[in-house]
Amino acid sequence: MPAPRPGTMHPLQSQWRGTPSPTEAPPSQSVDRHTTILDMVKWDTKPNLEHVANVLVLGHESRSHDPRLRNAGGSPEPKIKLTLDHGALSPSQAQYAEMMGKQAAVNMLHNTTQQYNLQGTPAGQFIQSACDWLGDSRNRMTAGVLGDITKKVGEMVHAQEAAAIGPSRAPREAKRMPMECMTHLGYAIRDMQQSAHPADRKFLKELGYETMDRVMQHKLAPDETRAWLRQVEADCRDQGLEGLGKLAKRLRHDIPASADGYETRLHDNIYGRAMESVLIKELVRDPPANVKQGMGALALHLDWMLKTLPPQAQQEVALQVQGMMRHERRGWQSGSPALEAFFKARPEQALGALKQLMRTPVSNGFDCIAIPYLTVKMSLCMQAHGGAPWMGRANQNYANVVGHAAARLTETAPNYNRIAPKSGITMHHQPEIVRDREPAMHPGDRNRPNLAQPSPEQRKALEHGVSFVSGVSGSTNIVMHMVGDILDQGGKVDPKDALLGTMMFLTHDGGHSMHEALWVGKQLDRSLDLGMGMPGGDPRNFVADYDSFIESFPKAKGRDQLRSAADTAWDKTLSHFGQHSHYSPENNSKP
Image (cartoon, rainbow, N blue to C red; front, side, top):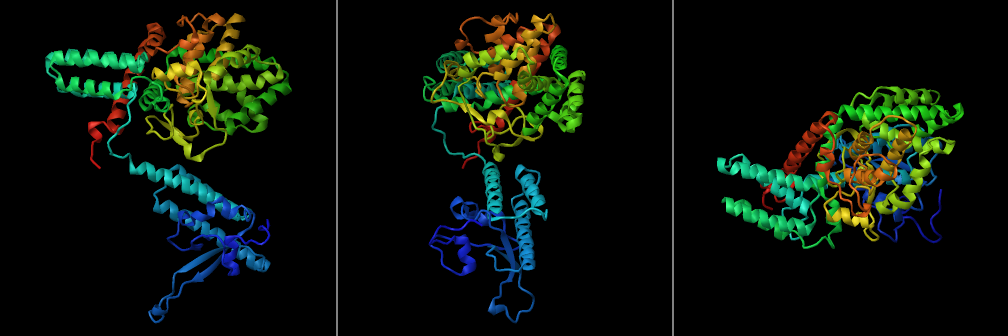
């Protein structure tokens, strides 16, 4: 075992040697039926464990005797004292003590689950996994292992407890961002419509539509939003709606004069994220038929490209793609049976399962979003074997354009506290609005904008109320270059359907906002001759107009479904505001 530094003694070792420690020792290592992992907090600190991380933790039964209760009868409550293995026990004694120590840890974990109501939560699932691991006699509980368990469980419990407390009701002094203020106005308009005088209903209905349209078009720069609210205030007063006019005035004063200095608030964008999450969720729930057809065309092209590789290369691609997927399971993937079958396939069955996935008809929204997911993984893997000819141009475009525009910082290490059963692009600290099938990590929770060195595209998006999730999309860059390859070879696929299907995947998966996919679609529309009719001009000045994108689809290609999804998303976003905002009349209890 690692020895302490010369002339020093570890505080945990000092307990069983009876030697005073020069540093504060853990308060207690006695475990009874009330002890939780949080009582062991000093076992998770690096200074206390760095020199004894590989030392086994043992348990010794003890009973606390109070002389005053000597004649009261009964047996004192048994406790297990946790200590480090100092090598003084016989093999049989050490084996028994190790078992006692592991059982004490399991008891603490179960106590933690009960005391903090962790059943069914990510913390509860982690605790059960830890108990199963400790229950395996082949696994050894060292001080480092116990410290890691203590640290992870403690972080998860504290995160859950903080969420349960709820937000402070103290007065807010910070400025509010335009998207939040527009959502507040939309909520008030919807609320007033329920009891409005007939003469006011038309005015409120039209104002409600205009509010939503400005949100969908990202007309959310601070100066233009303040100017519009000034006009709303005047119009409301002319209509005799003094209360709504006062609200418009207050919202106008709540918005800063410019976006400078408010980048982190603009990045948070809780209601913009909520709206897009619901909009895409509605499309995944009921995808347009043309999107299913488009995704089927992408899958068949992948299948054809895979067949051009030698058999050994095909097998290697299948295993590489499967390995990439297994590295980070998606919370939605069980909704696509063919994808799930490939994910679970044994090595000798992986290639066949991959081919079956590409040849299975796209029948639901999860099948739809599985195809862009697969396209990105297969393109990356096939290029190493001479396949995926579109990747040359895609890589060049990423290096020269997309990567610089994205301007993101990425955390590669997994964070168990950010695993959540949600879908969409709401952030891990925000209340979820769309539940998913199972907990998962989401790409957007690993990425944040590089505000120290922002790109012009990033600045433009944030100041117009666009949700920054991961920056402009490299995945869209890959998919749309493959679409260009299909068209160059005489294949048939509607690029706009492919773009919409890719957008559905990226936003539902939690990796990109709709704007971040549309930006790349706009950038590639002319260079790849895709014919999508995206707006021209400098990509650095592009701000996605979701209304225009929806209206660009013919009725026969899903326009009404897209419009219905947008209406549902806006309505649920207003309800989200009502439930969670400090400023909501539904949530106005005093501190």
